[in-house]
Image 1 (cartoon, rainbow, N blue to C red):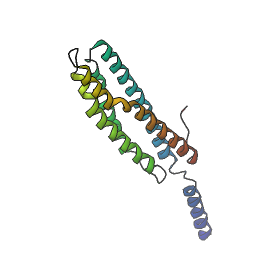
Image 2 (image 1 turned 90 degrees about the vertical axis):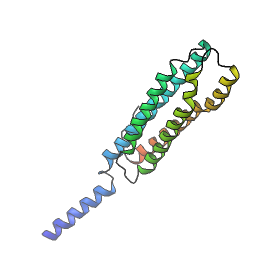
Image 3 (image 1 turned 120 degrees about the vertical axis):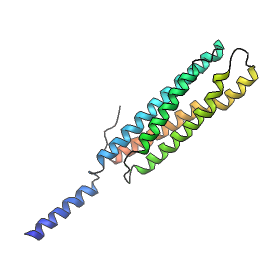
Length: 166
């Protein structure tokens, strides 16, 4: 009787492990956190670029600092949240990719967004154009990487039976 009970228990544990049932909540959290992080980051980046366009026309760059600081704080908080996600075999690659993306984005925001805050009506157009060239690919890059990670998350969700966000 004991052997049968032990055998049934081992089979149940094996079945649960093979179905990834124990990892589903962890994988769901990874999916939800990364999807929400990237959606918000993409929105915040678009808002900053819209502010930049307005600032260039108005020659008033004072509002850029607050927006950049907001993005920087957001990135710092979410880099920590992503770093603290519980890894599973299935989630490790996507968590690592997200960590690299957020780190790269934090560096870009720090290095490329800040110079615009020192511009004013007296800033030569050539100086503005040089900085605009440096930052021109930023929005395209953020959108492309977020789209790529979103596709990976959809595949990850399908393979791991995760509820997806609409």
